[in-house]
Image 1 (tube, rainbow, N blue to C red):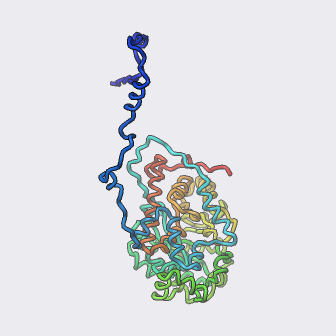
Image 2: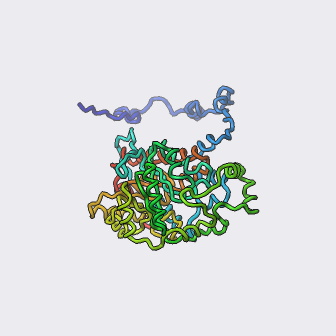
Image 3: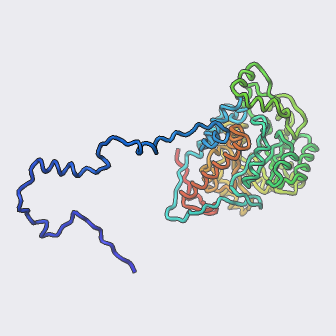
Amino acid sequence: MTHTIQPNNPEATSAPEAMAIPATSAPSAATSHGAAASAVPAALKRRIPKYSDLAPLMQFKKPEFSKEARLKRASTVWELRDIAKRRTPQAPFDYTDGAAEEEITLRRARQAFLDIEFRPGILRNVSAIDLSTEILGEPSRLPVGIAPTGFTRMMQSEGEYAGSQAAEAAGIPYTLSTMGTASIEDVAAAAPNGRNWFQLYLWTDRDRSLELIERAAKAGNDTLMVTVDTAVAGARLRDVRNGMTIPPALTIKTVLDASYRPAWWFNFLTHEPLTFASLSRYTGTVADLINSMFDPTLTFEDLDWLRETWKGKLVVKGIQTVEDARRVVDHGADGVILSNHGGRQLDRAPIPFHLLPEVKQAFTADNTDAAIMLDTGIMSGADIVAALALGADFTLIGRAYLYGLMAGGRAGVDRTIQILEKDMARTMALLGVSKISELTPDHVRLLDK
């Protein structure tokens, strides 16, 4: 039964009462002033504060300087980046933070995530948020994994070990780079229960490529990620200006820089020398290495060779057009990664987030179940949710996790993942969705420029 409750209006009176004229004369000015004074609420009257009132307010927090406290104070990936910059020498920080040429692509990629409008639904039950998903036939607790990054132990001595172990603990995939500073076998041993993927650069020496593929399979990697956007090295001008070499050179500039970051240098000098664990020892610049070892003659026929050789899942990273996304699937890829290498190769390259709806539409039209993944520019959980809403099956983070690594090693990577997870859960709840499958393009509107 429905009950109707009438509003109570104290100012409303019956007609006769409203017309009644009081018999007494009008109140004096003194009486009116006293009535006004008595109408002031007690809470608004001035008084001398008591110590018992002040005591609860006078709680001074004891300063904390531990790594755990420092990381806990970071509420965003950008704040982790600030910590990382303070604690890391300029050359390795810029190697992570920088991009190619004028870094236009990186700025545009990050701006793309800002140039959207979320469209929330209301009155939905969002008491429990489920962020789990499935990617390439296996479950992932979160819709984000760790992308391959080269020379990771240069950023912080725990390097790939911290990344793989943090991913294992979070229940998400970790991708080891061909240019990693920990071997395939060592990463597998460090995170034996993790879902480990291996990223491959195809070399002119196919026998060496085949050796890496066999090692990855033997170590239990279920996915091979082949990167195809490095025919030649991009012009990473920060590295050029910093004199970035492999291994880092001790110049007068680096020694002076070290005086402000003693912890980094202590770790660097007291651990095993940095090398590319999957390659032979090499001395020179990163660009020289890429130009001398990686194959600029790659074609789709090489992808066919990989498909025949590798029996696990095969994904292609570096897709920047709809046509190429379709073609690699036709040549046997189980998934594509829309990526411009974090803006580190071709400046003014297409932005993956902008390309995403077109690729999703094309795959839907082709009736393909190939996975669509995306990286470049992701700095928050809201960025990830926006990508999922517009059609991505999964996302990958590179710089975001490296900022955490530089800020605090393994604990810093854990903190990055915690921040992103909290961001995602909050964003989805405010959008009115409780699980990833409920996200649709209707939840995101791309703003006009």
